[in-house]
Length: 303
Ligand code: SAH
Ligand code: SF4
Image (cartoon, rainbow, N blue to C red; front, side):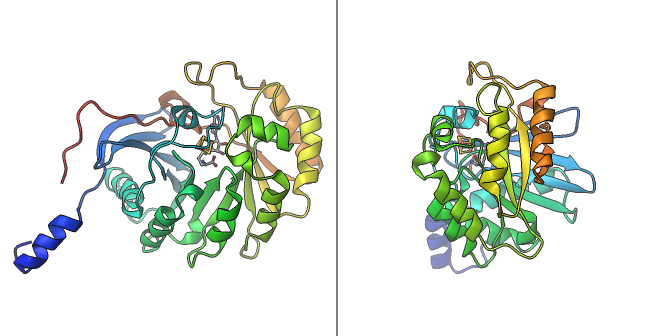
């Protein structure tokens, strides 16, 4: 940019960089779900997923290069903590997906359900939501959290407030503590209270994610407790059949279809709005809880 004063160029070179994440790998599943491994400036690799849906495409972005919450059913958690992404790095994932998939102008949803716990990186996601707002309304953005209670209130105070999804995954404090060690530092009752207080637009609901694990959180008792916990909170429940990974998540399995259907039916009978979310992109490990990232042998080129 030789039209800028030399002194300014020197300052810019020192303090800033202009770089999109570099595409390290692309894998496309037969259902069209496309998973990207994206290398950041320091060599960290995060994953982002494009999920085609009827009439609208969902982009699933990462907020951290790893995750400290350590949920026992999640590959990202099994790999451990990683650094926060900057708002620019998060927005960079969006830019790469939109450019390579020719999605400019297409109707999009953006979900923070990739690698990491977004509410342990509020500055990063707040900045990314601001940058996104030029093209994607915050009403089309959903932040999914394992339940970092104090940060839920902070999310609700953002000028561009996104939709909220909470990964509940359990119906008792003990069960949650076993499944989601760091998130369970906050009491289930406090988490439910934070959800009650989250400011929702008229007609909106909080999404409850519930990963179904055979013999662990799929009992009739659980199906009875869940509606009681959620009473009075405007929610829709997504049951996510566990996506197995024998290498990183040994010993866990998916309930059979009949159990999942019975569980869903029981919630519906208690007047909960419930859907079973059969994961897309299983063939490329692009489904929930299967994002692992990786540090490449060769550091990426810098733009
Ligand atoms: N850290 C945030 C967002 C990323 S995880 C959170 O936990 O909400 C996105 C979703 O994938 C969460 O709802 C999580 O419960 C779910 N998930 C994690 N591992 C999974 C697995 N192996 N099978 C199915 N869903 C999984
Ligand atoms: Fe982290 Fe979410 Fe995975 Fe738990 S489910 S380890 S919070 S990414």
